[in-house]
Image 1: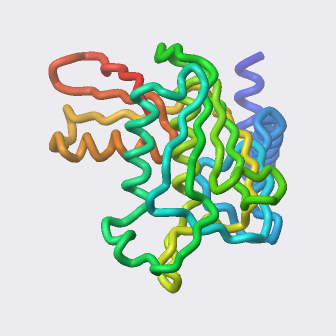
Image 2 (image 1 turned 180 degrees about the vertical axis):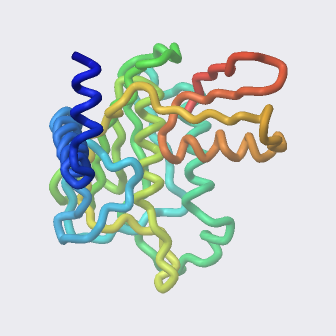
Length: 248
């Protein structure tokens, strides 16, 4: 039967074979899309959403909110006071605000987002493949829908979900060179997100392509920007790659 099938394929006209392959690819792509539907990638006003990866669900608006350079962290919940959350907040605040942000801001500036509340339900910091990384973000001006007075809120079940939420929050913050403010555009935002795939990784083969340690550290840092969790390092000293689960 296999021999007959092979003969039939070799006798098939090239154009017909090409169409058959394209049809099979289209069917498999449609099946994959049904299993993992692509999230929306436009705001309510029709502008592209510059969040990577795109959140699972979100709603947006048309307002622009100014973020205070002295943005304060308000940790809540059983895991909100974890050192990892505070360290991540300081790291992202440094990424959001340039060193000269305080000097450049207007003297009479008023800010819509002056506080970031991070609520973490669990104090369990166990890191393993498949850990809960889901989170929810609310950002709105005072008095608006889902409003938080002078701030924004991230809610998560674990510290790792909270850190993913901090990454998304940092991507929503954009520097305005005209007003010299960091802004959140297209507010109010409501984002509900979780990974589509538990395993999201990258491998570096340093045995065949030498990379300085500083470059490897930069790669690991950049992995957090894309919310990757698994890092493989393959060097000349081992025959199998070393698997590392990364703290976001």
